[in-house]
Image (cartoon, rainbow, N blue to C red):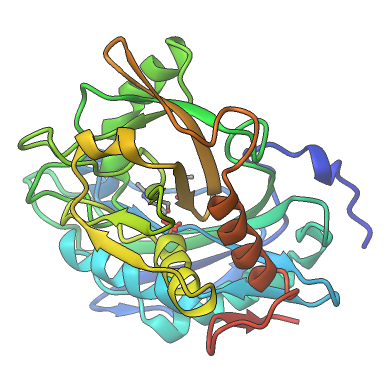
Length: 340
Ligand code: PLP
Ligand code: COI
């Protein structure tokens, strides 16, 4: 490896890497796609993405395993979720096989930037697509660009595995029949004011409740919730306006089929939260970040797992998932894609 970065002290930020992938949709079909060193995007001033936010993205990671291979984790599920996002935003679907090939190409071409095993850092891969041709009436663009770059990252929350403090947000993230279940850029634009305000008030993230009734727990700006009951069950919120997290689905499988735990995927009332033993935020960027406290308008919910370390069940889930990703533990069939 010739690239030397301070791998163990990376934050979750953008570092330019040499190669990215680009493909264009024109005249009803996608181009073959290729790697480029050009990190600039040139589009018309009236492009669909610039006027009406017609864009969706994905996020996945590449890992160096204990035995020195480079792998990705369930990229097929990112390809499928991007299909759902494209369909909901009236964008052409980017073919799954081409998506998987693009991931392989981008990671292999930037392999010097895949952080070493044991450094705590990983290579974050960001596929995204957007309407690139002009639209001025509100309608879908005719032409699209699909791109994928990668950047080495450290923990999403400062402090890594240290418990964080979140607050119940008065802002909503997603409407009941809106776009919360897809990875549309517009969902994140919606959350920017809420996250800046949360940070200004000393909180790490927002807990969003269901927008219609403010009764049920939905998710945070960038991760799903995973709760543990005092009798050791794993509970995750179910709602049509939550992003179907690949990490959460994988953790539920791990809990049930590898750790032999009971898993409930069901609507979770906010007034149940005070009775849980552990709470974590799960996602590609967040991995599992333990939550120590939840503020609700002056009232504080202190999770019994406390502010010093992850609760024992969260830790077991974290160790098993990262063990699978880093090749320390056997993976369920089809979860690991070897790049090299
Ligand atoms: N929820 C939101 C709003 C997200 O942005 C993400 C990140 O992708 C997740 C959940 C976690 O999803 P995944 O585990 O697929 O990364
Ligand atoms: C991810 O986990 O991949 C995300 O897209 C979340 C984002 C907030 C960084």
